[in-house]
Length: 220
Image 1 (cartoon, rainbow, N blue to C red):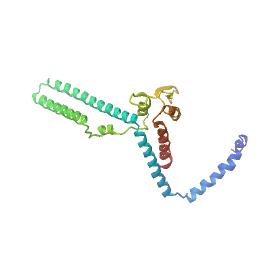
Image 2: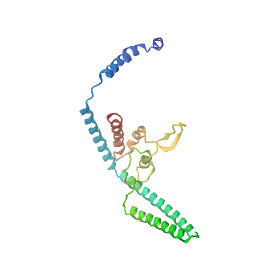
Image 3: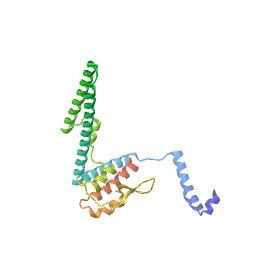
Image 4: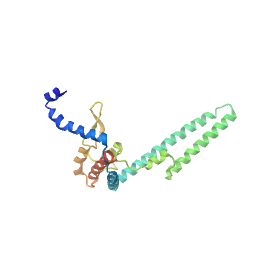
């Protein structure tokens, strides 16, 4: 082992840095390491507040409010459409029940289908009126997610309600290493887009990402 280090001209690094660090690690393993708990807790409070403040700054921008509303409407329309598909299926099942020979079974099945259809109509009425009760319905009320690649692409590049910045480059497929059809919103792209942004959104987004990474990776 030492011969390889000598041949690679790494022995000095190993002897003077790694061996010295080993002593510190051994000492920590035997005696433990002091941790300033109150300081760490204060850091968590500090960075939670900084992240929250940047999040609020981002949401003040009109493009964010518009895209958030658009995404909500799209989710609501998609949910209502899925309910209408369920209703159409139930109607077909009800129609098929009419052909049953047993009158008792026919009456029971048709009554059940009528009830199920009416329940779904009531659900559509409730959703249209802005009343959301189930978990799936409440998910529509979730605020815009700045960590969502899909939502950020809509906001920055694709949706006419968003910024419509020019697409500088596309993301790369991890397996094939070829460009995908998804626009990139990586840091280098955002830095290049800063000069085209008159709202300060890009600058705040970069700060938000940096603070979030520090908070999630090191503080928490």
